[in-house]
Image (cartoon, rainbow, N blue to C red; front, side):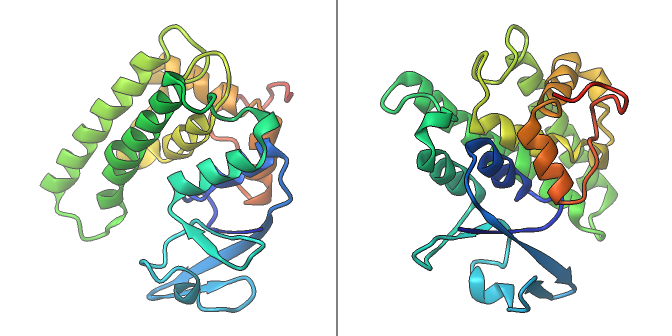
Length: 215
């Protein structure tokens, strides 16, 4: 399989899941240059993902391309059931996970989208940031009594949430104001798979103390 990504974009989420699952996923960096988007192999990325040319995209061994991050992380988890990256199918825990991933996608991830526009009017920027802060506070409350969003075990929802939390400085959000999320982010950066994914994308750990001991 081949994962098309852009460093630090939402494609970091399936990148982390692939490394957690131990899947032999090949990476293809997509370069954004104005209206053009080119893969590491020199192909037009719009030909890979004609639905807007967004990362991530996952080319399966069959040649078929799967797009949309929430679908991709679920697919990757299903390829490695022994890694237990999702709750068991047909349980309420599984559907809670789907509900949470939908919330992260529609309420938090998409909430950041306006902030990536250089022409966003100040009043709309303020509205977007206020909305993000409310959604961030909700995730903070979810972690009041557990290490990960669904309990004590890592899941694909955690990879997605961590990826979006890395964008918090863009909204002027300091995770030190959210102690549960701050601890969660540092916990995520203590995971070997997260460290590998960050290194492969040329990214630094944003939340873990730099002199902290790596697991």
